[in-house]
Figure 1 (cartoon, rainbow, N blue to C red):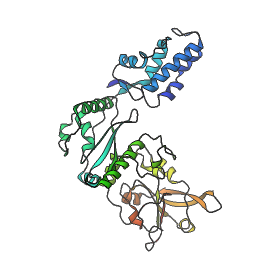
Figure 2: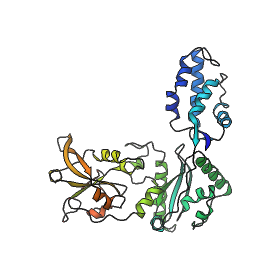
Figure 3: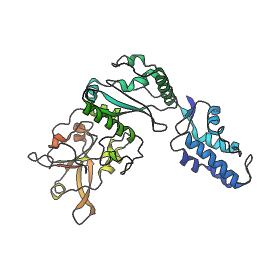
Figure 4: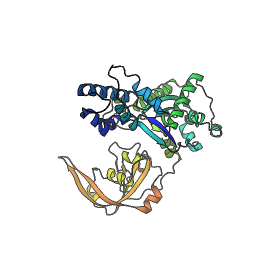
Length: 373
């Protein structure tokens, strides 16, 4: 087990909620602290600013952490020992085990990816620290080099093109990430890139990659800062693990008739529990009379073209009503048999006669004669 000092993304909320900080601000008789509340408030503000400036950084000793966080504060007021200790206690972390390095991608996945542009992101700060391109397993090349995974590096098919300075900087960052108990986030910004001779395709690929790369800095929500990302997931960067799941997954068998496909984006999260997926699936849907009158109707929940859950609708209730139509939410149970057949398998719009999924995510499949209607 190793001990490191990493300033987390949520340091501001932790800092403001700290009992030690609250005591420092409210008490006038603390040792090594000014009796003047204005001075203490100013000292608190400078440490707060320093913590925010160092978000995502990891230090391997308390001396290094203290020097980075406090030695650069030159307000003339100093930083009381109690305030330093309060900050250091919030950033100390015990690393029990280093994360394993990524496994090579299956050939079926690398064939689907073709040539791609990728980004490496530091999970401690959510900042991209490297952008590259390649084929095969190039996306993992720097991590394998940093962790000295020489056997895995044997599967790399395209040459390293970075300068020595860039390579050293990337490897240093990766080792710091793993030493802190985290691992690198790998994103594909664009894949299936056309040949360089095709100027139009190449320009489009570069544009898509730029949009996806900038999208990694979005805070989330329905109104992205980058307007290119408005209206859906097109153009967004994709975790390599999600692409590997998509391209290695079997296609779903024939869909049951009748059924409804529900696109629930929240279900794609690796952290989503079964209860959370069910809750997200019970959002308001435009369920018509034919759907609501079908007993035990299968509801197939998918996200990123992968089936995540299957339910049987037992009842429907009104979620909202407008002048034009009503929205309904269902109550149901997991269908264990259908989940064995469908979950973790790939479903695409052509399976219901569509070219792309509708933005609203509601896809009834009530008859074989009229799929997707």
